[in-house]
Image 1 (cartoon, one colour):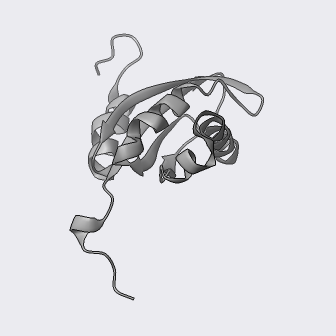
Image 2: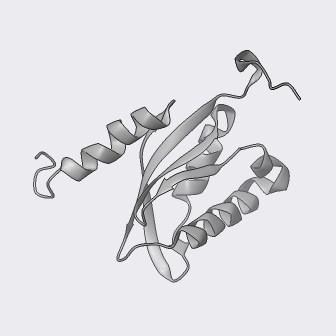
Amino acid sequence: MKSLPPALKRKKRYIAFELVSERDVDEKEFISSLWKTMLSLFGEFGSAHCGIWLEYFDGRRGILRCHREALNKVKVALTLISRVGDVDIIPKILGVSGTIKKCKKKYLEVLKDASTSDGIR
């Protein structure tokens, strides 16, 4: 079977986010709570066309992939999550990018170099 040409493929966006919590969050529980929020907000039909995929997650920070048309839906659902498993969280969207490489470099690697006192190394 022949694949679609690039002009017909759906464009993707990558959302860098951080979870402010007392301890690290389990990846499976986070995905489950994200899907529960998506289903309650947009239903099965609206959630199915978002194309959500967790690209990277380390317990506190991560990158979500979604279709460009569903970017606002995913951002709203992500910010409305308040509890993952037994951990209370506050999600914070760091930024959106068109490539995963730029998303990691611009939003996640900057946080590793920042100091907690002034935000600059």
